[in-house]
Image (cartoon, rainbow, N blue to C red; front, top):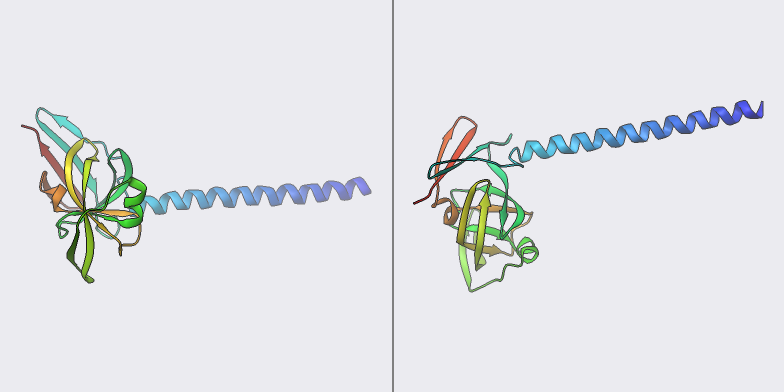
Length: 173
């Protein structure tokens, strides 16, 4: 009878462990799905044809273009913003990337005028598109880890939007 009781206890324990594992796996799957809803462009590739480098991005559920890229070889998440004059990096992320704040400046944002610091990005990569010496700003008041991919970078590419896709083209001389 004692063995029967021990077997039932072990069975309950195994059932609890199975439920914990199942819930953990479901949580991981949901987190991955949720992440893809925010950034559907986590693995940007692109193609190169003669002197044209082309990247196609999908918009997210909020109709924004979010994509994973690189600044100075380090992975970042870009939010394309044609209304931003510069590439804008949140201060806490700029520190992680080793960006040096330069001269103070002021920028007009949706939240009013803010003090920012000039900096220079050695390289900026988005799939096959590669830019060098890109002007940027470090914004101490900006929260989050997304980098605004503004016109100081986008002016070097042609972009066309059709439906939910944005095509970026870099023409090499």
